[in-house]
Image 1 (cartoon, helix red, strand yellow):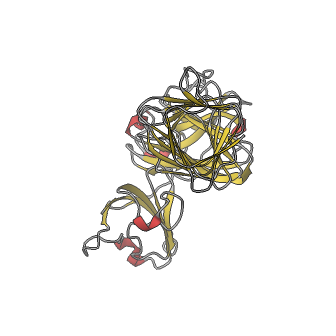
Image 2 (image 1 turned 90 degrees about the vertical axis):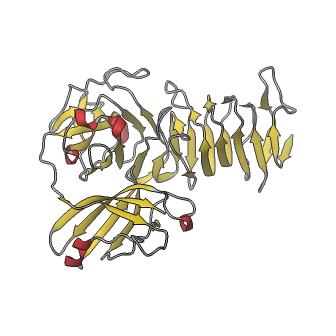
Image 3 (image 1 turned 90 degrees about the horizontal axis):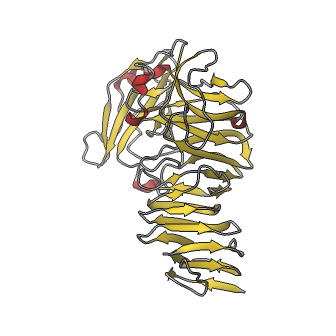
Length: 382
């Protein structure tokens, strides 16, 4: 039995059980340009994987997705402030749009996740809408996992050397010394070059392809307990082989004590149980500090672009701009004044014509002809 669905706000249907749910035991399909709005639980014990339209989870009541089989949607959307519990996997082939509410997955069962397949993208994730639990990718090389906890978005940026057949990630706002759903990982057990390890938060990343990651921090991360110099921050992982925290130090950290991000060196995620931030015993790389900048990209002729006076001394330079999570949004060789609040790289926004959102951004400048590097902040508003 095949059903072609246009737009239906489902409160009850031909498939209803005692718990009030859309219960699919046949072959349910949302055709191209079709829209299916769910205001009730979804139980999939049939075929629900040949879809081209939009499926949204809406309403004000907590919803649950369960059943014997995973569901595969083309476009996916959540606008439910009381969240959607995933007791089985959901796949998206094109785009998952986060409006309000979280997809929640059990951290004790890593096979329940929101899975982004091949070219699928994540848009508009935020503190109020993300995945509180596990996100997976299939057939993707680079991705920003829209993970967090009940309160904040705390994404992990993954850049792999090859395509991942499957990789998974979740964020935990709890001490690695006493996780609620995992064994303990003693922050006092450390390898060479590692000083203090965060006991505030960690990420779990699964995958078998050599990769680098970017982790960010904010005021809730309590970085001041680790160091008073953000350039001393590194990524560390709990080694499965050595049963201790090992340095995965890569590119220098960017930011200050209250916010910033740091990149790792290349490693195989499956060789480490979890990842977090730590301070290093080595000498942090030095950067020249410059003033912070304001960019008001509103076309009034004042501060419409980013102008860094120091670059007048260096015609051979490069500029990179990152958002607060470490996702690169702009890069240019021999920069003068081209940044006006629009991305030219990355996937921070689906509609780049509208420009980047208001907020704090970090920049890194390399002045090759002078042999100098520096970093700073800019605040973008419109």
